[in-house]
Image (cartoon, rainbow, N blue to C red; front, top):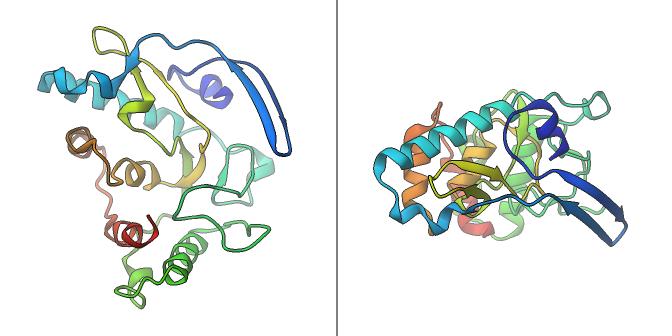
Length: 212
């Protein structure tokens, strides 16, 4: 959140204090006014839905430009603090301690390995060629969904919340996680139609059917 506040105009909670140590931690943040978008979405007209999605993509574009600190330059994918532990089912490491992901190939190998470990069979041989490729990784929220978008009574975005899995991921990752199976089908359709680029996530969807 501090990185996003430093480099973008996207509204995020202000971090007042944070205190972390192994096994526990605490954080104090400013209050974001409004309500979660999922409480309001079904009441909105199509023009407003389209505007909100364009606003969301505009913010995503901004934080995709956040530079990676020099201390993390050797990592292709990592969390904002440089750690490699993630709860994302596609990327959870089967090893302890987790191995760093230093390039695009390593990401695809990790996903394929997890697919095989959890008895994926249909695409056992073809999944690596089905997975998307990205020659860059960009700063990513990782869980953009209506429940994490705060809006006011006029349906203008007042804040983006829940940044705990944010970090550097392949450029398609933000979109791919938006399109995870969920009850937000209409919002997903609008985010797909307003996306600045089309990403083929067929392989990721195939892996998700086994890993989720």
